[in-house]
Length: 98
Image (cartoon, rainbow, N blue to C red):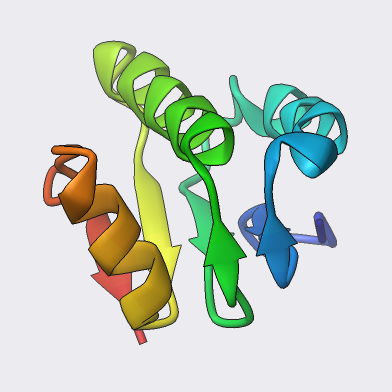
């Protein structure tokens, strides 16, 4: 995760975003949950993502959306996108960045 200067916070997902990494991921997400700046979730490096990680990300995005806070998705990652689609999760409410 990077939070520097005037840049908006970024949470970089690990290569293997599984239940094993969820404690660390949850701590990173909680640290930026109430940020008034858009939070970027960088899925560029994800090679494997499981249900637990997807549910955590979904809950984070929904909570920010409920408070009119922006979440941005970075990295057009087919593994991430296909896993979210297979679970029926909709991430289109969030903005995508290059």
